Amino acid sequence: MSLTATGLHLVYGIAVLVLTSLGLAIVFGMMRVINFAHGEFLMLGGYAFVLSVQAGANVWIAMFVVAPLAVGLFGVLVERIVIRHLYGRVLDTILATWGLSLFLIGLASVTLGFQQRGVAPPFGSFELGGTRESVYSVFLIGVTIALVVAVLAFLSRTRWGLLARGTMQNPAMAEALCVDTRKVYAWTFAGGAAVSGLAGALLAPITGVVPTVGLVYVAKAFITVITGGANALTGTLLAGTMFGSISEIATTFGSPIVGQVALLAAAIVALRLMPAGITGRFFRRSP
Amino acid sequence: MTAARTGRAGDAALVACALLAFAMPWLVETFTLVGINVFAILGILALSMSLVWGVGGVLSFGQSVFFGLGAYAYAVVAGNLGGSTIALGAALAVPAGFAALLGYFLFFGRISDVYLAVITLTVSLILFHVINTVAGADFRIGEIALGGYNGMPGVAPINLPWDAGRPLDYEEMYWLSVVALLVVYVGLRRLVRTDFGRIVLAIRENELRAELLGYDSRAYKLGLFVIGATIAGFAGALYAAWGSFVGPDVFGMSFAAQIIIWAQVGGVSTLAGPVVGCVLIQALTTWLGTSQVADANLVLGALLMFFVLVIPAGLLPRVQALFARRGTR
Image 1 (cartoon, chains in turn green, cyan):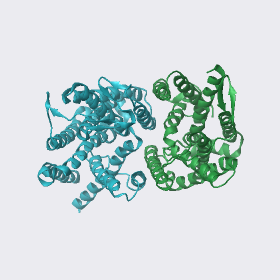
Image 2: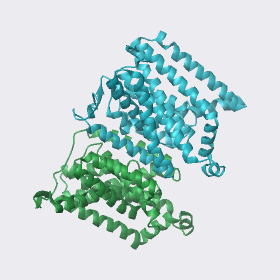
Image 3: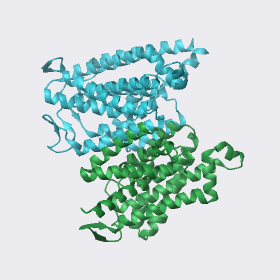
Image 4: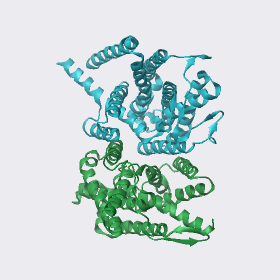
């Protein structure tokens, strides 16, 4: 394999890590809520995409409209029924969302069955240094970059983003200034869910969808966001780059399993060295 | 006054349960006894959760990891050496060593409880992937193939100490499990009352104050974590010997979740709560498995959400409170 192809795989690995972590990072960074059902949000996004394509919808509309909208609405529902009652009780939120995760896996396997559903990846392939690479993976890298830029721009340039960041920094003060913090939390959770839904849809053509597909991503997404630290978005980019590189390099020289183990070992050592995460140690003032 | 009353009622209930468990071999047939046996083994695992989460306030999602490591360590060593005595020792040592290493990074890094929950779960998920991959003849330790996603069939039974030619029969295995459950329970009750136990409780209630009094909370939490892991590993060895099988499912997400659900349903503020939860949930999942009424994940997930939102204290503390209120009237 040529160097350029290896470079492409490296960037692709980082992009997938950041893409699958982004929704989790938004919710954790803004609300200090760890959503253990994050993997199932990805799974729902994948199903929303695949099922609507199979029902005859346009691929791009299914991917960029149907999936984020469906999972975003589902996020509103989850926030109303579960999350809202548990603000401030961090561990209880973890337990309840874990219950939700099992419930959704159970529900999907009862209603949709265990057979893998998929949609063929759009675009063809091209040749790069003697190996064939899929155009779709380049597309995925591009969409990930655009998505990260869009989320950062939304948070730093719009009035809504300002309100959300203010609520994150000091909820009591935001409330004193007539910000409806409950509404901000609800919208933030829905927004994170929508991003997860989009991520699930983007990955569906590559991996296909089964009820347990979320479990593949969720472990890596958790440690990426956790290692990122307090400023979850910047942290996720940094940790995603670090872990993506480590995991891809270990995968190239060993196997995917070696990659996973290397990623986990790196995460545990990183947390020992930087208990407050990367941003807690080096980038105290970034968003 | 009320505490003493519930304490006495609780002890009476405990003695009644123990007597029932001891009478079981005369009450039911061997087939049923083997089925009941697993409750006692998983009860030991539930007790390890009571210790780590209930007493120590450390919400670890990794008790299943230590259970699984104990089971695999037992299966590999017993298969290689052809006797269970050293294998049982390995089933205690391997999880304890792994917990010491992992706990060093977790507690001495002073990461928050949320991070600890996530990291322990991640360890379990990644071990699940690793064990699933090591299928085929290449992956073996000594004589024993690890089996990958197929698991390891034909795990050696437990035998009399240093006498591999004399394995325990079903009834003796039952006795061993029940007595072990009782010994671990009584041992943990005593542990809570030692200096170590009191300091761990103090750290749970107010870590900063305990540190200012001169106790190194990191070391105490690490000690507790290792004890919990050792108990879980022992339960794992019994489990592997009981079913003469161990597979990667012990590292899976739904088994990790079940342990949490036992504790949440039974009530983690008492040592016995998770054991009660374990028996109830195991009975429920067994029934769901045979009757095919509903998907087990679906029911367990809904149950966990319901308990966190509606009955966060769990069943046993609720029942105790009921008795205490009746007592004061």
